[in-house]
Length: 182
Image (cartoon, rainbow, N blue to C red; front, side):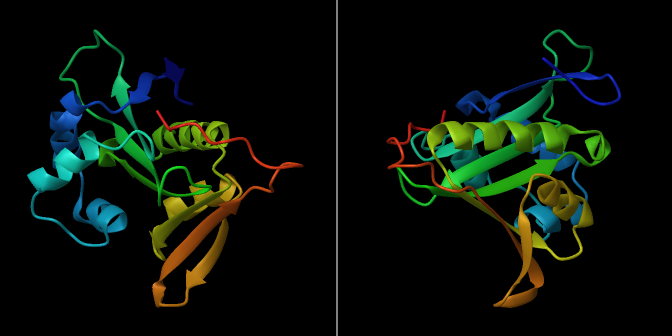
């Protein structure tokens, strides 16, 4: 259980295969801008193949978290936000971060909570370089990431895209073998 700045209590946990309907529920609350900010295009529907891949992922190289209402809360079980950290290969010291927060839950701290949890898991797994591609006009995401120490640079291949990168210095001596992300 985590309290948002406005006092609302939410639950954050890893995504499990049974969460596929939550992806569709989150998508149903997304605006065209939300989808463009997350997928770099507006999608008329969330493809079932994508939902399958997002909810049934390789735990040795990916971590996906979902923010939910507390168990027993009134109303339907719904995803307020979903965040993902994906390594190029396992084990790796580099990973990509992606995040989407339901439109009606944006600017309430859900993205911050999910990002903080992903970064903590990445640190435990020995991931030292985390990056995200962000649309240049997605100011809330750029502000969020810079608040976590990400450096922002224009992507040389596309001036409309910002590369956000957080590099942590290697500890003295070799890194321990990273553990699978869970």
